[in-house]
Image (cartoon, rainbow, N blue to C red; front, side, top):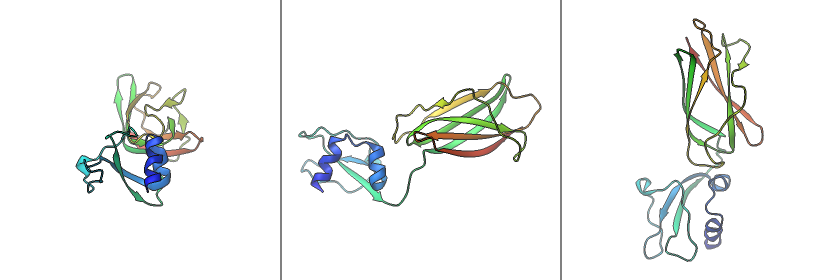
Length: 171
């Protein structure tokens, strides 16, 4: 375990690497003054921790070993509302693993032909492998007044894999 601990210190505790090895990192807590790890306490845990080898700034990593493979994007919410210039689409993520960006698609029915509404990939605001998420917005200025639209959010990861979320209906 000591070698593994030193290994994580040397890679600055890259969260993507930790997720690949363990599946679900719970957090990090600074070591006790006697060098031992305290009992797990979620209220004291940090999402990211950078250790300085050879100093008193050492931490303990808490994780669950699972067969869980994190999604490129864990979506907290996505909504659409009419605004004078079209439809405002807003979404928030809790974390983004290897996400490079997203696209919006819309159709006039659930089964209708999906049309991409953004000209270019909307880039992520999160560093790859981050344990954090971000809030985003995009305005679909081509939406016609009085037309109902279904929207899908498509996230794209670094390997080109896509995952669709939705749809949501904006009347």
